[in-house]
Amino acid sequence: MCGIVGVFDCLEMRPVDLVALTRMNNSQSHRGPDGSGIHTAPGVGLGHRRLSIIDLEGGRQPLENEDGTIFLVFNGEIYNFQNLYQELRERGHHFRTRSDSEVILHAWEEWGVESVHRLRGMFAFGIWDQTRQSLFLARDRLGMKPLYYAWHPDGWLSFASELSGITAVRNGSWQLDSRGVESYFALGYVPDPDTIYTGIYKLSPGYRLLVRRGSWHATPDCYWDLHFSNTLTINRRDAASELLDRLQEAVQLHLIADVPVGTFLSGGIDSSAVSLLMARNVTEPLEACTVSFADPTLDESVYAAAVAKRYGMHHHIEQADPARFDLLDLMARHYGEPFADPSALPTWLVCGLARKYTKVVLSGDGGDESLAGYERYRFFLAEEQVRTRFSPGLRQLVFGTLGRYYPKLDWAPRWLRARSTLQSLARDWVGACFQGVSILPDDVRKQMFSPAMHRDLQGFRAEETFRRYAQTAPDHPLSRLQYIDFKSFLAGRVLVKADRASMAHGLEVRAPLLDYQLVEWLATLPPEFKLEHGVGKALFKQAMRPWLPNDLLDRPKQGFNLPLAAWLRGPLADQTSKVVLGETLADSGLFNQKFLQQMLEDHRTGKRNFATGLWALLMFEAFLRQTRDP
Image 1 (cartoon, rainbow, N blue to C red):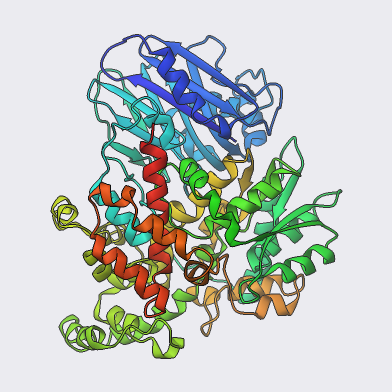
Image 2 (cartoon, one colour; image 1 turned 90 degrees about the vertical axis):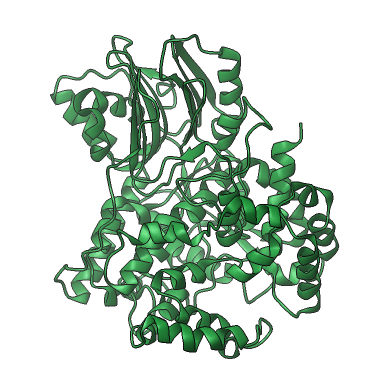
């Protein structure tokens, strides 16, 4: 796992600014504490920071081919590199290392832009081909590894693993994108391919970009997408057995490393399944790491401990508490753009814990998306049954009117909090899907932003991003929701959280449940295998029943959440008020200060639960200070 940067003169062959390239590379030193390398040639510069996992001595980068005409910088792991190594050797290629990086280099020589189809793993890389006078960028199918790029007015293209790799050479001069700000306060992150800055983009998952010398503003090309056919004919018992076999294969592939591999063990089904399959494939006890919470309604460590004991793991636990509020600035600096998922804090803590014992861990990320584990899936399908019985006009008239006048009862039991359900029923399925994952509803964002911010937005709403995804979404309601989550929530939130937190600690996180061949197979299964009678992950639970305790499999999903609302009303209330009403947010000109004050008061008194919105403001303020202060 590493950090990569690069610059490419799209128009000429001007000299590379070595000082600037070095600054870009060093800005990502946390991603690769084990070494660094730089290569420059007329019109091109590549930089690399290395975290040594495979071929500890021979995998240094930038990596060149035999005659020095092709150079590679690569971040990730290719799990089928040994098979590709044999195939490429049979085709006449000669290898100097045992690294998966060199496999990519020779695959490019053999298959060019189509080489991405041969790679099984997580990756983001850049290839400079002197003979073809071209730069090739590619990102893995599901977006496990990040890749940013920017077109500069002077004819240069720059790219990097993190935003800091690009902004390092023009610190403070990048302009905030009002659409990125709107998306952030709607979703808690800025979805691909946009970023928080005008002129900087993410290369979307499953996309590649080929830039030839003499061209300008080439368009990224989608080489892979997830197709939910739901057409596989198989009975449940055989499907559960095959699921276990496929996951076992994925776990075995993800264990390939020249260093010990540990596990994140949250106590949920996904991480427990991955951990037990790991334990069955290693000879030494696993190092298993867990974050606990003082609030018993959120704490899953007792279930993690039971799994760890059952499979002989060395179990390590760290408790999250409000005192770790001091990490916000550090997290904001490493995330590079505002990121409002509160579970980023416990993720940060568990990464720091794991790094004490290993450099690689496996996680259960991706199970909720592939296997329909989110509780909101059940609610969405129930709402969709009602939604399809009414015309759009009648829905808006009946449910929209009721939703406007029904009180917002955040403090009440769930069955009394009907306002969001009524508002969801008034929308079409895309709008309902968007509302289901929004951290702040439309009406709150409308009041929160200043008049100047609204003018800059020119009517743009973050929901438009979901409508773009919906153009290629499948027909079945559950599959639609899963597809949108793969495009947005997984790529922009779940995987970003894991990547930035782990890389900040020099730790590599692998997610076998996101092996693309496993994901593709799961997308062929009937939807009712995944969500059955309102129970998510039905098939997965059936497959894991012989291996995991029933009380773990059958309990309600808890998630990896903080007791945020209580913290912001209690031990963090004064700090929150000071930040939200402080100079940084006020000077940005983006917000209605009176409404921010109202949010604080309503949350403090319990009239409204603005915990996620206030947390988003805290992280945004930290982002502004960390990226704008000299």
